[in-house]
Image (spheres, rainbow, N blue to C red):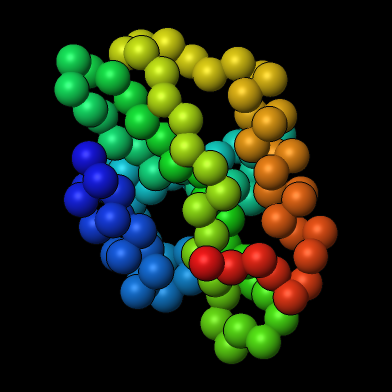
Length: 105
């Protein structure tokens, strides 16, 4: 799974901004999560793993947008994450955006 996540993130990072098709692995989110992207990988026993990402166009001292992985979550097959889970993701994104220059690793 780690290799698949890395492959998707590398493909997204090297593609022109907002041009990566995704093939079901990279999905733009909607509703309260508009502006967020989800990397989707299925693990053993049909368990779902997700990374929640932003394309940061406002990071100081960066000539190009930065692909930022904010957090990851997992869930059993054919279940949904709760609104509280998504609220926590958004809160982490707000914390990241509150600093500029950004905290980048």
